[in-house]
Image (tube, rainbow, N blue to C red):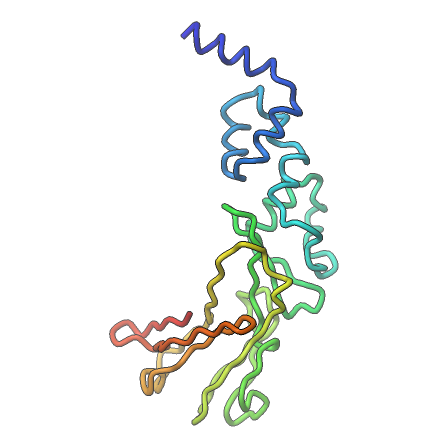
Length: 214
């Protein structure tokens, strides 16, 4: 016990700049743990010098006015990181949202339906546009009936975090009486520069009615 107290005292004597430099090489989770476990680490672990290293390099994409201002603008780099990792924030056009991965700080994006290219998306007999109450986006596209199902989206690669593995998902809901998504099997394709990846997906599961797309 005495030895532990002696070690704690030795840690407390380390310059805050040195502790900050060490914590900046860890992860957001480790910095939070350090702040909670050791009072000697708290000031360094909460410092802007540490959390600036966890935020994406360079400036974040311009956010919609007031999107991070409620109830008050972030007062520190740590608070900014925690807000962006807690949920998506809208970009200026309000058609794309961004958030940070809590473990790595990598930028993640979601494209709204209005930001996608949907074949016959503006033809009311095939697709209708409905308000969304449980989304950051104001509206979504509702499929009525279509014989050609094609949806495409794109994002500039410069908006993504470097040295990061990304996955693409299509987020959708189904009504209780939906039908027709189980056959034929759909095809999902992702392209980045000269690289292209294509796989078969099924938007309608066989048992639960839930589908997946990646």
